[in-house]
Length: 201
Length: 201
Image 1 (cartoon, chains in turn cyan, brown):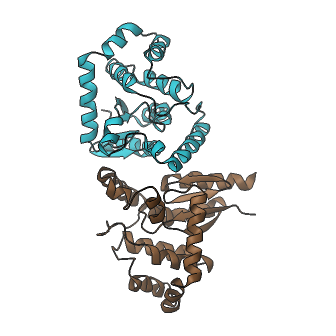
Image 2 (spheres, rainbow over the protein chains, first blue to last red; image 1 turned 60 degrees about the horizontal axis):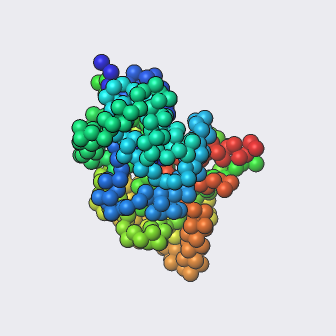
């Protein structure tokens, strides 16, 4: 009986990129299952009075983040190119990721979208780009993109965001397990360890 | 020839408490020297338009931080009691810490003040509390407190803060080495490793 760590991520979130890249390997080793939970930070930031990423609102913090991310990617052997536009609108990608998670290919789709945004500087808000990602994964792009715009998926993403807020989530990546919240790529190992102890208990 | 890691801390900063507790042991093991650099976040936050700690301004983030800090202290075996007042005014403690750092007892004074604030819920803004900390360390409280109010020390703390801003520091704890900035208790090990490589290079 494996514990399940919920991985809450936002496709525009820079630190979610390295987290998405390594969560599966770390969780597998620990015997922990991962639940892929895309959500949107936009509405959560807006509720705090922010109309842009805090990394843009506070340029000193933003400068630090880009250098920090560059160091992290170098350390983890992840390709990285600073996107020419930040943050990119992640609504379509999040909706498709919801479909993907429901069908068991959430991990590979998610990693491919992060790569497109943060290693290839492609516009993930563009349906052609997401369609290209889907095709490269051997998924039928047109019907999936159509379903992403359906009331059902729109409603499910809304509900997912409401759940994030109810769990006290305010940033990405976040990890939740057994009433505990962990925020940040730098909390991933601790979150996995917590989940492993939750199984043992 | 040891590399020197500059440790930038603010006595009101919650995450600086575990960093101050463990930085010396980690740095010693790596053959890295530590420079104790107290500074004030108040003027830096004010320049961003914040008149209070972001953990108070954004209560959801604040709730998370207190639980996160509790988990970290439990893991590190550090005593912790949530202060009845947060943040506490750290001006006097920072001035005394500057004196202490100059005389080679910055580490022990700093750790004692963090313990007073975050384990004993004592008001570190109070000269009697800081005097008590000094006496417990076998230091003559009265002359040190008098010197802390001197124009020389006031000016040096101001200059230290200007240096922090010039280094791109926007939060605490921060660590600087060879043009690199690391922010957060969770970056301490990486900062030490960076400093160690700086020596080797």
